[in-house]
Length: 290
Ligand code: AMP
Image (cartoon, rainbow, N blue to C red; front, side, top):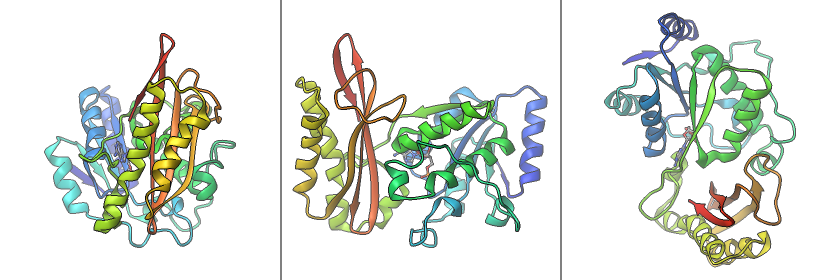
């Protein structure tokens, strides 16, 4: 496995792979890797060779007062994990390599970037899109792998790729959870023991909504009531939003139709956590995937 720090070297490696007609698979991450990230790497390994994983804590997607400085970083450990999975290249540039002095450009996907996560974290998705576009241009993958854990991010990136006629195909992979249901996240490391227990309320609230749907509920109001009931009974968790949206547009839906997502975000202490559930209609009945 080769660890590449420079944009030019990464572009060279990608060009060489391209010239041999090899299928580049790409997994962008901010490091502090866990099983969620590794599941994306495994999916990439199944379809592609070489596989490139980027590790870059992107300052442009953190707002003032967010956790940029304290974000967990452990490149050495991450590289051990990736090497064991047979990753070919780790692209780990420093900030100045990606945003050299005088950098001025940013990418915004209008209409999708201002709601849900974007409303609470202004500028967040602009930072995400800018870095993802740069990374896709540097690595030039055929397939790029994202987690449904960050469903709005995956949706926005897909929109950007389509709008800008980029070559990469965006593959969205399932959410990997801890044994008690908590969606894996690098930010879970911020939770103390009590908060860690409270954080399962997100999963429990989605699971309650799932049961309601499988019992026949179709109205967003009655489904979201289940989410509120669970989260209201957890004093350490404070809900930011809960909503049902159409999976192909991220427009709020008041009744389940087709494929939908139930999105939730909550604060446990000062840690923001997000989660979601995919709801799918098949032969007139709905099933939900956590
Ligand atoms: P991050 O390092 O948080 O920027 O995440 C990098 C990628 O890993 C993103 O596409 C995330 O959606 C994905 N990811 C993070 N947590 C999980 C998880 N629990 N399950 C699946 N994918 C995840």
